[in-house]
Image: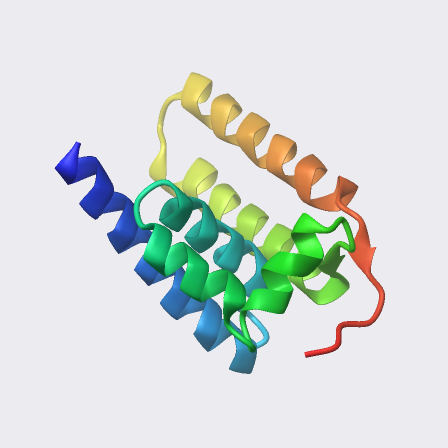
Length: 126
């Protein structure tokens, strides 16, 4: 149980760090990474989760998603683009098994559908 908690905190902190970098670099999707960090923290550290959602700069990303206001269009475009770039690279150059290639394509398709079905945040106030 302790190992799971530590792993979730580590993944959450890594995701949080990448999300912060994503605020300044347009190729890194901030909102999905913050949502991943929040998900990891809510399952591992109430203190980190509370800090994240009440943070003046990072909290609004999560709050907008939780309140159904949506995800910024740029986050959707970048997220889907990076998802498919990494999956296609893996499918064509890394994985030799056809069944695994089909599984990866299915996973990418599902997450593309999931991201695109989310409401688009028209104007963010950060």
